[in-house]
Length: 253
Image 1 (tube, helix red, strand yellow):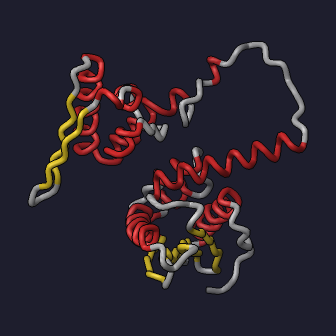
Image 2: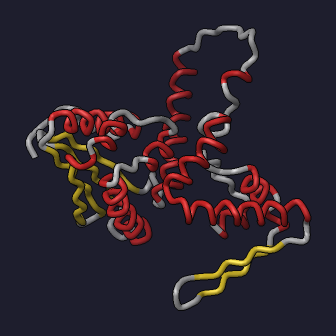
Image 3: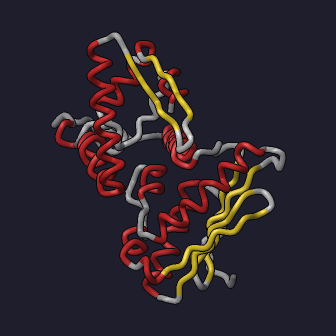
């Protein structure tokens, strides 16, 4: 985060507040010191600019609320700061001009739109997952008893992304088991098919992380028909939106 602020690299995530946007916008006016302690770190950010000082103080309060409120506070922040402006800061529909001239996109324009969407998914994916989407490969498999999420580095010597994959996937398995699907929503900038049912039926689904030679895998297992349908809907969407080329056919594990 310190590197992002120093570079003024605002990721534009849905939960970002006006205060955080202001900090990124005035990155050159922020001084940061980081002190390592026996239990963690202490980060101190200061500024001589009144607007930036106010933003730093406001953001500190927001972070405290997130720590205290957990995922409920995160959802509230997303609703307040992101979704009221569209998921990634776009104006709400009510702000769209009343008169809109329709147009027909040609094939090249549609292709460019799809390419941009995929690039956006990769950009948000790196921000949420913590590893380079171009240097890693996702696979999604549909099985008769559930499915699997598999991520591997393209280069076996890429220890940075390998470690990031192996840090991310166990965490995702834990979040999913609790019915928390915020991460895929952030990556794909939409309500991902199947996740509502998977959250509701979380007690009927098991998520098991396993390390693989070049990354890791989350095995998703269920014996419940409704949960199975939701898992398959989720995985089919992932295959399409990540453009993995995996088969949407169900097979035995």
